[in-house]
Image 1 (tube, rainbow over the protein chains, first blue to last red):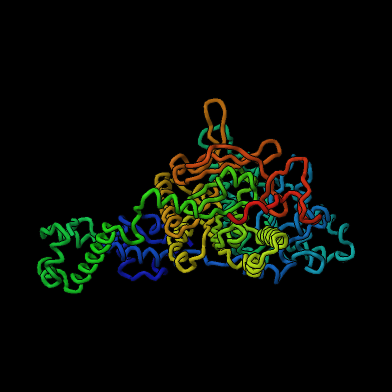
Image 2: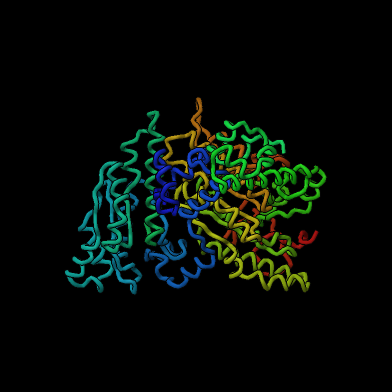
Length: 253
Length: 367
């Protein structure tokens, strides 16, 4: 949205050309300038510049929705609002399960079972909706190389023996879990940014990143001076992309 | 009329030409007329006419201002301000301790900033306020609508449904206890659907969308004149990452603060912002301070800091022009933001289904 070119914001052609001479081509550049600067650059009067500002703002402002419309949209499709974890007390506390459309974070000391939980969630996501799953593919970004496919099959076969009664069902389930091994921060970030197309292509319904902390702590030593800022930069950029993916596709992350 | 040409809101090229031709005051321009102007400076007659119309508008605006008339003037006596402040409503938070330290609740026409660590309850308070601003006047509310600008994506509709349902139930209980006709009539419009339809939600993904939305807000507020609360949940989030140029950030934030002050004053609405906390690494220890730097601290009129103390949530009034600095404890229940009840619970007379954490409101609806 921010990188939207001014051309598409319905500004006139000569105005766009004039602004591009000063390297102002996107809405972001336009809105970062003050009114006086805009007057100088466009050569227009105060009122004209205000009208231009409104036009450009309208091009990138978000759409309004009332809380009521949001509620109606959710109630139309109640089953798709959560991914039930099949642990009843956990589902009760979470009001239904892992929520779709937002980020959920699982933290614990080592060895408590985070990766096991993630593997189980991947199995659950591939189940059809009638059994409480999301009937879709899973993208699993693994930074610790802790994912074991054999364990995946073991969980699936033992938890849902009636569903996974044949080998081909197990195979098709494993087929829909896409595993990416990334070992450095920038690889993880690049992978997250490229996910949008993959999600649409492979009909992904669950995104798991295991784990964010390990790769960040490996690379950024907080005792060194500049690293704190870089680390938080990386984390917040990753976070905003993940939030966008979660909300846009209504999937749990 | 004696206004200098250089201060008029005309295009810079035109201004330069006027200065070169020797025009000094607006009166001279008006006396020359469009044809004379076009011949002297070398612009077309239509352009000259446009320029003169702008000048005339400006001068009329000036005259009105010096006569002390229109609403654009910002000058009034302290007595008028006092009367206005006394009749002004507050947006209650359903936590009487917090309302007390704020002097009645969140004030209209002021910017209130809520800072706190993640998970301490900032978004909960914002959702509570978005519901509370709609309470009808006979129950002590301001009967307004709310605009919710979300930058972090933490707005959960289901939670707002819970909070709104608890609020409606509370008002129903009061109406039954008081048995008055106008209370019951007001309750007919104060239903769950109405509350939810009057919360206008905008999801801004980065700072450009936030800036664009704030530019468009005055227009939106002019169309929806009943809005009394603008919440921006997470003003720090889009500005904290991906910003190499810190001076640009300060400039944008200052511009944003100024626009919000204008909006708060012109539309008589309260502006509530939430901020994150950042660690300031000092000589020997590090402290948690509100994010976005020192200069942002001047933007808000009232500053609340939420923090933890073992497992108790505390709210501190950090900056306020009229109340003194104090700390209170609060609770977040399934019904929303509430007081912490002391261990000796007084049994209310309104019936056994009432949540004992809700304080009885019978003492303060009508002044």
